[in-house]
Image (cartoon, rainbow, N blue to C red; front, side):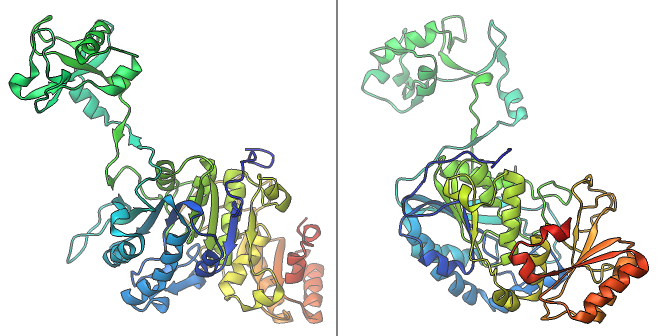
Length: 513
């Protein structure tokens, strides 16, 4: 897309802002939303798996033990219950809710959701094969996730999604060919059981009741060919006149329907999904987010359970796959995540992938999007964890945070010039390589960076043979600024100091040039 990247959509609700990413605890944000305002909710909360989850981009500095927050399954359910109560409150009676989880707590999650949404509103448990087969020393290897599908009531949006038939199936079952070269399969024109009405009366000397059956005309075929008739027998005549009836022995024998291969509408989907692979290591959409889901998975869910301009909510949106899918499918959307880093990367992904601008004026016109409640004050930025601060600073500069720390001591991120041609090559290093054309970024969450910090960064620049680098801090001592000048005088290499205030005030363009 070009320009502002999105045509204006009609406002979905007078009570609710959409195309908004909220940074903060979703429990607090959900309480601010009106009741029954959302058409589709998808959540993929951190699983209670007792594994170390790298909250964003796999950086070693960002690893958080999941059980630091949830000591056990009971703690996890207690954490999720009030959030699911709020999600149920904001879901429309005609809306749909999807909860994505793995095997560790799925059974407890199902019981909790039955209590909150109601057992009668449970529709399906989808099994998604999320990884390939692998060995397990003492049990069956777990390779799937569960996605629980609930609705707000008995009536809800359902688009009857289908997938293409397997080519082997078509070859095996559609073996006959008509005079025009079209392949077909001859299927029954009758249904099980006797009927006393017209469908039980003979047609052309054939009485279906003799074999305990009745005439069953295919409604879709009749509509497709606009075939009419006042009685079942007249409609059968119309079907035969259209060349849709197959007579095994030239007008004799039991008639059957010609079901043409080129009119197959796809196969109704089941609750087991094996056709959407996990994100490969070299996939273009891969961001490195540890629980990132394929875009095609979210597109399937959103297509099945919403219409254009419906409101889609993801309250644990991580790297924003659900939001990207919603935007691409012309839905309104709301995202919530507690991580400032994740929110900034979501915003970058919305700009880069969907071509939608982060702009207040465009957002008010129904074209752009906005990010709300980011800790964009010096006071709040002093309080967030160091890894969040580092990623905030790197992304604010338009850089890419490091994914691999080993061997890159003193470099928290890299800026790649626009002129550099992107290329993925070599073994996975955790970042894109641009023909070795990049500038290092160092970030210190310090009140005042001193001379030793600059000297260390200068050494890193010399090791990596970089001519320019960027250093972010809340402030710089006079000695550190003098060291920057001395480094330039001796080597001709440039270290550009940037304060948090300059970034917040958007006064960095002149220094990034």
